Length: 282
Image (cartoon, rainbow, N blue to C red; front, side, top):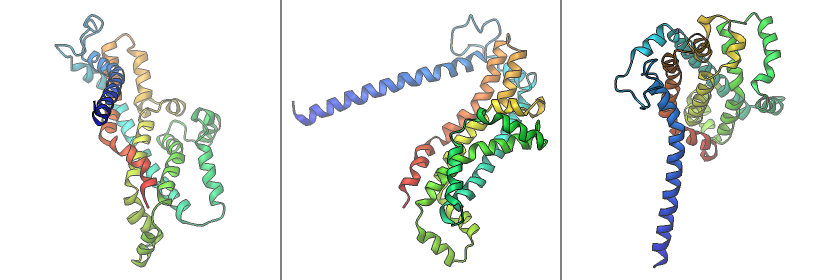
């Protein structure tokens, strides 16, 4: 057997085994989601007797009951508002800060930047006591603005680090050309830095959307009013009330899970591209 043919066979067998392994892992990850979606379409009587993934007679009314009876319509709109507001705030503030750290010279720049990096090592529960005291003194407990500001703060450190790494690699000649054309500092940030940083911004949007949408602990600390709670907090209240109504519970969990899965599937191609963008530029 020729060496080239032998190499191709070994390569094919190796790739085949890798793909089989990845398919098995994918099935183990997807099965709970499929079971959850299928169970949301069953009745209370058939949810444990019908072993099929999807029932023959789906009960789409479970989603309507979960949306109205369980209050998921209100929780969903709250989570949507928090996610859009927080992610927009993180993108604007972190891009401005990262651009300043990368392109401007001012006293204490490195110290402040390393303070942001150090904040990445502090877990959110570790800051609960001072955070609660601060929010109480500012009268922001059980308010939307208090929760939004806290969540923006949570996502800033990683976003600033990622964008600064990207801006550091951008050619200085582009900035000089923009100044010749009459751009101010803010003009350069808006017209040059942000468009070039779109891959990195896409990563920030994805990661922080996942973080805000799935956040539960901080919402438990901040909110006591049901009309202010996001989906994850509302899901726990719904579970406590309807813990024996498994079909409605699964419908509520599907409503909670599906939107962020769709966002991830739509934007997942930007993750690797955005993470490596800072290395490629320049």
